[in-house]
Length: 241
Image (cartoon, rainbow, N blue to C red; front, side, top):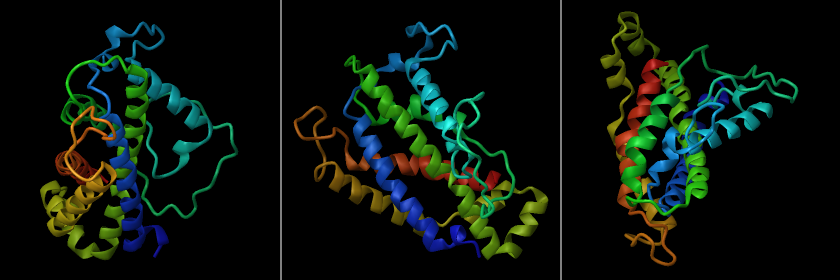
């Protein structure tokens, strides 16, 4: 089997991405919601009528596209019309994924701006628009990579249990596929591990937003982001793939 589809390798990637996501959420929670950065009307950027955060996201992806980030099978851009790479093309002969167009970034961005930010950040406006937007771009890119890695998980599960998947695939039965890919025991282990890491990385437990030395977010909320959004979206990617 392709090494990228070995269960231990997949778990290793997902565990490393946990660290990146937890740190990214903790960093963003230092600042208030700052809803202005998500509103196009508050940003005089006539080229695209984007928000402050959307402008930074697009400009970041443009530079990353030039360096062929989005030619990798585990990377998915949020923006359309990105430039072609200036570096020579890489061949991904070892790519184990089937050709597909699954990209949930539009959903990820909407949920992030409308649900996750109000959930992890204190309400209000502290004028830290640039710092907040920089954190947002990092959060979104990391969340996207983790959620879309569900394609590798799905391919691994399909190859391990092909017979179980064939009938629901032929029927187009998404509910049956969802049941097949769900492992509640593993999900609970992930939630417990994420909470432990958040306790460690965030200073040892519940903290007071804005207090010196704290990152301003409760570990329970980090685990809840996984429970409410990251895990369900990952399973949606798996079913669609």
